[in-house]
Image (cartoon, rainbow, N blue to C red; front, side, top):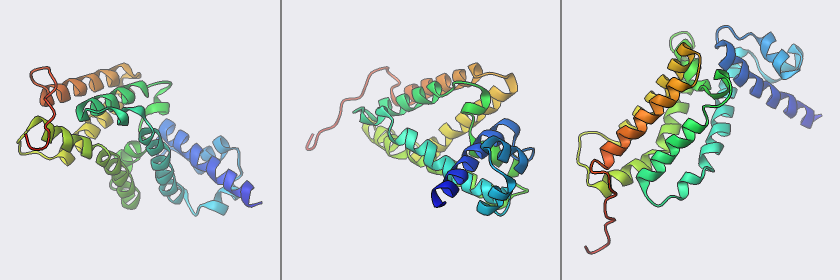
Amino acid sequence: MAEIQQFSKARLLDAALKVVRSKGYTAARIEDICAEAGVTKGSFFHHFKSKDDLALAAVAHWDATTGGVFAQAPYHALPDPLDRLLAYLDLRKELLAGELPDFTCFAGMIVQEAYETHPELAAACAASISRHASTLQADIETAIETCGIAEAWSAESLALHMQAVLQGAFVLAKAQGGAAVAADSIDHLRRYLTLLFRPGGSKPRTKTKGK
């Protein structure tokens, strides 16, 4: 019985990701999510008190699902920090596959709608985006040190800027009805990072101890 209940809960969480990314948070009804999950409303209320309660759990589910994809990505093995950042963007571009709801950001979509009306949910989504941005900070910091950059901006601010571009790219994709404009935005961001860290077009020499 416990396994069946966990299965139905997992189906509800997956369904929430799909329905909300398809319809938006406000328009997504509990009935829609139950229909997508193939469970009854009774099963829904066995696991969650409300749509907001489900959404909070779905944000954590989104973090775990997407976090695993990026944590296991092969770009982490590249020796150069900028190459890792560029390969991260290449992966983001590769993920622009399928229909719009298949690649747009669950957390970003909710926070656009709920930043005033559902503050707890909006805060959870904002934290999700910030946590993902933080996974890029170490590579940015290493790139700053390697390239000898001394500017009045931080690795954290650049990591958040990268997420701002990606979130904006998703909005443009929705506005134009396709992924092409989002891919272009990622390409521009890739060029920006290259110009920022490799203005001369070549890799800096790696510093060695005592030199």
